[in-house]
Image (cartoon, rainbow, N blue to C red):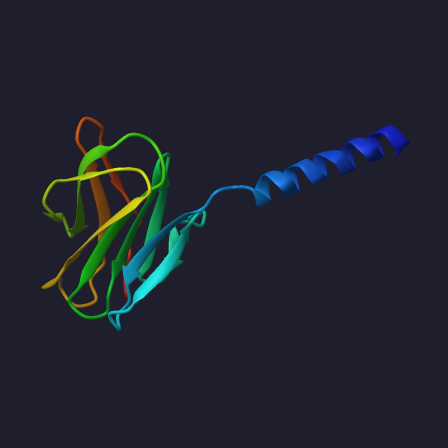
Length: 146
């Protein structure tokens, strides 16, 4: 390899490492099964699975998180990191049935969360975020068993 190519490859590697190190991560808090808040970084994994019962989706202005607890609870959170204010609601879907929170306004730099009780024990659920004038976003499936 000639010196010019070696220098170019070294510079490009340095640029990539700097860019990766300066990527802003979103952050959300979700209640754990013990009731204490658990913090998550949003740069969701490629498959959207934080853990077997936690899932997330990276969105252009934040991250959507969903957790299905091993008891009868499910929780969905949206951490908004940029963009203009939205009117939205959080929800989840289980076996074709959807439950929603009420509508709320949300600005950049805030987190909104909603939890539901009475969700069938250890069932698989999907977290939802419906934004007025846009669309409904969803997380990958969250399950306490897989």
